[in-house]
Length: 404
Image (tube, rainbow, N blue to C red; front, top):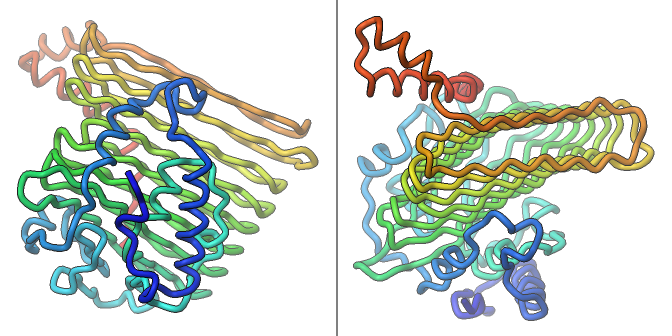
């Protein structure tokens, strides 16, 4: 893919957008795409992702109506911004009463301001993320002013091909929660056709004493591809409560980079991956403890169908000179067939003494005794399997607390 081919004309771009794009294009010129020989990409289906992202750029001719958006992403009582192929659709947006504290808007390439330092000053180390920076169009922006409380917003990115040709686009979301604010954000990535691919980026800044509840849902169409990158910077005493759901696209790679930069910051990240037949999903989570007294919890679960593969890498970095760090991670995979495959890789890099860190991983199948018990109570075997699968996913689902 040539990112410059889909870039807006420099004549209509703000200077900061030109700088961001130029930096990304320059980085891409000096670096090759990843391969499975790269340690962080060992479990990804890189070839399938690169092939999907090499498709023609998605255009703005796709026709998506409100019932379709509601069917794909829900229709909760929150401020909603809908972008189709990276461009906002005013007729699909909504404004809910009682949430005036949250700013929900889109930035076109010509807009003068850059709302987050993290987006502008990104140090590129990911080929797909750099491609997103080089090729993205409008940016979805969520802003919670200092001291605001209980605001809510829903960003919906729709990938919609025109005709039957494969397309790719690069949805981008920026979230800024200022000091002392509290906000809930749901970000949905949905697709209308298997011929479409999305290379998504979300940049989050949570300032001192602020709280963000963030729920990311990927539900692309069967046969599609999805690459996601979530970058989070937490200030002193900032708190992130997040969930990550991967339910749709056939080939995915989702990366979370969370930096606990401020003393006393904390993150809880729960994830649920459902890999249907022949799907290939890979998650890489990195939590970088740079401040003292920081805490992190990672809890990921995968449900893996026949001939499917799911991988989870949970990386924890504890920096020298920090104290009072608490970091824990758990990963559990449920294999629904002998041909299903799960990979779990805990990765701890601890360069400090005053820490409490732990990790655990389990891989297993449905409990035959539990199935027998349910069948003995008159429950047909398919329903018994479904109940046990729902129970396995329940721990993650129960962690979702959406306060509209």
